[in-house]
Image (cartoon, rainbow, N blue to C red):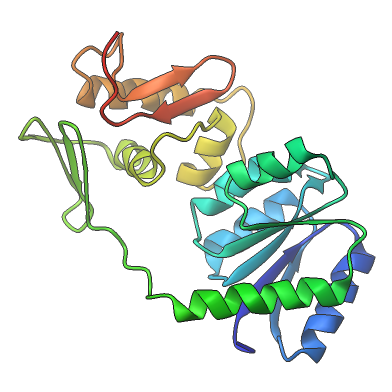
Length: 235
């Protein structure tokens, strides 16, 4: 367990230093830290982690928004560290992909105990195997061959449109904002005026939807973003 790779994301230096010091004493020596959203996403893109401690309130973003983006790069255990203690906040944290929710102020020894417990359970489970085939309704995506078939017909997709479809296949029935989709699929910081996501959503619908103007798979959730809904009945 001492070989586990950890990432601590918090903008308070005192918390970063305290957690890293205590974890080092517990023989966790492979620890990275980040204090901003941008730095956290960059690290998750470039490195593999077993567990991530994520502060909800960062100077350049909200942890609830960052968590689904990170989930696009890693299957690491994610703990939220936050001063937001309402039941709604906790439910929101679990809804966006957190595995545990720790409120501030916290006992650092309890945090260490929770980390050890999660890592023990994770190590006792079978190794996750990447899915090779996604089959949703009329759509079949073969990740090994990078091929897409709709109603048995091969569909050619530009690389980035294919990556967008693959991301949706990996996260069915989840709502993602344009911001989250761009950072997850393109791996770059989103600029509010950028319409790249909308353009690629339109291209994807034109390729996989029977009626792109009345989409059956890639649906718009007004005011929130988009989600991939397998097997949705047309209305």
